[in-house]
Image (cartoon, rainbow, N blue to C red; front, side, top):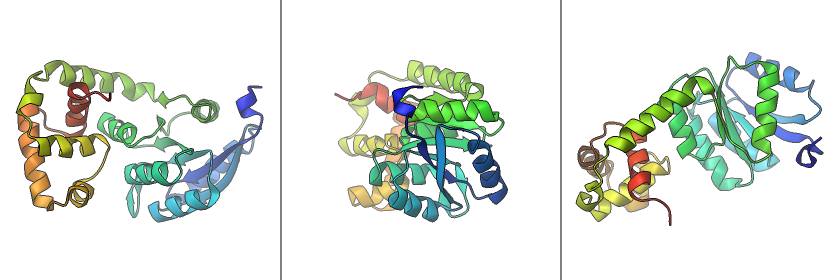
Length: 220
């Protein structure tokens, strides 16, 4: 066995459907490499339990009754930087997968995955690798190629400093409200900056803007 798996992977389950959590827990009980150490049904519970238990990995749904799994992921990555996040959801959308990646997730799978593949995915992510559902990977890559390939290379020259700041926070997966607080702006002002930036970048979605921003302003 891989040395990194010598100790069981400490796993936190987050899903608002109890029957899903019960099924997942039962499935992982057959694995010698994974130990379910806790469960959560809401965004608030997920953050609280992650802070308390410090799991190696969180298996997280995109949609929760009191908030977005993307926001939960971002908060978990802030308070527990060593905890890795793997999304397991029935929400089959390439833009949703893009949002989770931008929020710092390490993987995205659809719930039709079988038990053996899910266990392997948890082990893979726990070892420091990333994994994306192949059903969505190619559509997402096509979107990235189309958006990045069609971006105007001179658009960065036309973006104002404030528009760049707003887009940088969009690329981090932050909401308009969070951006407004961070930059001491009103929600309406943030929307105006985004609208102007989207027009200059020739995009219509936040995920597209994030891709183009990353292409124009790569990390140094």
